[in-house]
Image (cartoon, rainbow, N blue to C red; front, side):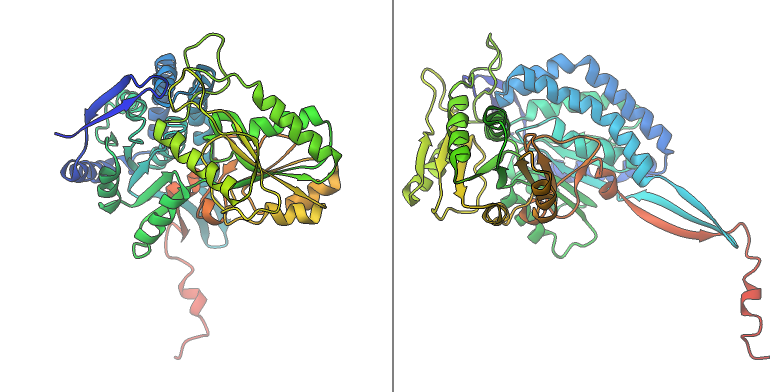
Length: 473
């Protein structure tokens, strides 16, 4: 038996351990899911809705335990993990509304009957979860998939198995009368590969752009499998004018929240090469110096915690050092925190003006600053990426905002608010290497079911008359 373990990045203590699902276990889970789909997919949506509501109630009962579990596995402060659990709870109502609005049944009277639009589930959905929001992000796939009538086999990130196990407890309670509709399997890469290679009808994935590119290749010859990818981004934030302190706050919240471990974090700050731009960069650096960094259970509560692991910190440091080697000027260094584990790092800033840097996402609190001569150059810099997840503009100029909206290629485009801000009642997703044109959040209902268009009448009358005068005697 192979054992999987997760550890608190704050101090390395063991959080969870359990058995890894091998290929035989994965195949058995998929077979059970296939058998369960025949019944689950045929039930009225009202029945599935009640199950989702029971799941919501189970989350409510366990919200404190779930928030602490997420904090222990990710190192995120409790204020943030409580917010994550609240988003999970809220997702149920949002998904129910989206299912009715975007994937419900619609009828239109026609001269000889009705045109009817229905939606049907795909079948067995595989969901692969990320470590940064181990509850909220897979939850955003799972709830709409089950509401639509699919069955789900879920593999949490190997970094956060305890969170997945708690979610599975909640679904087990909600689906007590419907066994195998939701199953959670634990493991790392090999378990994930077995799941992806199995008899699935859809893969719903949140993770890195590199993994997303791999899945595109894997499923190139499997057009029957729906593929919904929510990936990362090398996101630009153009800060052009306004109050320097307010703008700095937007930048810091965009770049450094969750220790930079959000796919929508600003990675690139684009400012005018003016007194405003220089003052803003200084204000951002000064504000970053004041960020409280600490363990999830400390008092006073920190704003950010560690990266997910020592290895993640080492990888980010190597990327930072690579930029310095290319000629980037250090504004704030990428360093550890004295007296803490190696997963703790400080927010870092680099001036990369005039330096060729790779178009890559550094999943850490690293902000690259570019100074440009005019707004034309700002737009060119913002769009100079193969990604297209989120972007932002800090400006009081309505004309600049209208231009930014038209020209900026991203799925989430914010004004005078952090790039990480997104409403659950709106779609969430990106272009290019950031996704595959199947946004999640409110639009998850779109990829969890396929439309069936029908033209129908209660009997066949009226068809013969359509041929009168058009046939040979």
